[in-house]
Image (cartoon, rainbow, N blue to C red):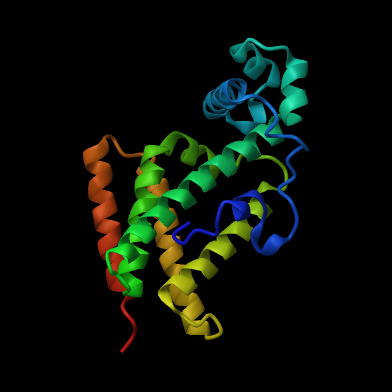
Length: 218
């Protein structure tokens, strides 16, 4: 997200329209076991895709009984959605921190703030490219596409507020939707970059495009 909705919002769909479908107590494991489970799940999902990933293999890589994995996360869906939440939450914290720094410096131009937030988001997408790539694939748990679309719409609304664009006007909605799509597409491209130099070139190029496209008409 370019404009953070806050930590609590990262735990539920936009506008408090219900939960993510995670099992109760999904944050129950101690930090070390939780991290081990999620890291193993990411490895297996990345190697085999969500559909072909096996819980037994994830449990084996962790060295824990399969039943323990079910106890903590309820299965593949719980693991996948928790990875998604972590990615989103980290991205929102990163962009929110950037916006805070910029505002503390006295920056109040909506376009400048928007582009600074977009840069932070794209840099985060590069830093977390393995997970980010997984989450934009079509191979996810049942219902994930609908959940992702909800969050995409919330992302557009937050960007509209940051840019001070009136969403009640169709032209305004279209403009902010295009800008948000540019950021999302660039984040996917970053996953295929060969090195950091290429990634930075892409980030710089996209931020230049955003500055051009964000300029108010007229």
